[in-house]
Image (tube, rainbow, N blue to C red):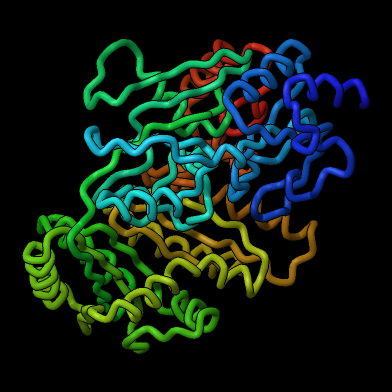
Length: 458
């Protein structure tokens, strides 16, 4: 162990940034803390050169490496299940350049999403990707191609990454992409690395695309008598060229949990479901969209139409939506899922979930992004012991993901696969596609030291 620490000390000169004894449990898991691995060392990198040095050392000595940022992952991608080195880049947290002329900002991977958003907004620009976890790091967002509520209008993280600096498994430093808007110059390695969950490279820098900061933003909550009526109205809203930023759906029983957890009350507790909309842009366009949305709501069976003009009340309503997973977790341990189905099948899928809940006796709580078919689903443990919970959860997930596949959906829209979803991914994915993914892994990391046996890796 002393030699191991001595070797690392040649790369990381500050010994306080190398942990080899009594490694804190937080480094051995993800945000949920239910899967725990082991490691020989944690290295807290501060520079690209340090990351490169660590990777060269690990590659030469065939030492597994688990990349880690803010640690908010939900599927075990940050669990060091093969031991080795945990390479923590959360200390690489500087915003390096704000380039107003190319509408871009260059950041290190450990910068938190909330800090990027506030930094650029203070300067009159806007970074739209908005996953629910604002304490997540940009590197983690890139590694999972994080989406969030604004995806229906703006897209996901991939749509806002212009360039990356990365370190390969053998320690080479590459820049892929550029500040140019267009690029057909060879294969898009940048887009290959985005969403790869730390299995191919380690991101050490990102150039992010920005847009103009919207002049105004307005939210609307539309209560409906039942879930299907509410969700089916979404297709009408989307076809009407209203260009909403976010379109969220929630059943009343789910909102009740959020209300109890947060102390905030939603309007019209007699509703069966709610559609929560937001619009942004110039004020005239936003006002016109709200008026048109009100007309469509009446035509599609809404029981009310509430414009959240009060900024504080609007914030409270969105806080409840953002806290739904935590509200469920406060009641019981749960497995958080992020299934995506074609948007015209969202209502069918949620009805299927409700029927599966009745059939299995397992509590299933669903809500999510109606505008892009991304259903967040909590499978609730209740009072089941560990053995029963593992068996029941596997049975429910196997059936659930099989139905998702039949509907043309996918088992992950935002969180990634990590350790938690590998089995179900292999069950439902074309073997030829899996083979190709693994060939790419073999080409980029032939010694399989980066996050091996996670996500798509056999």
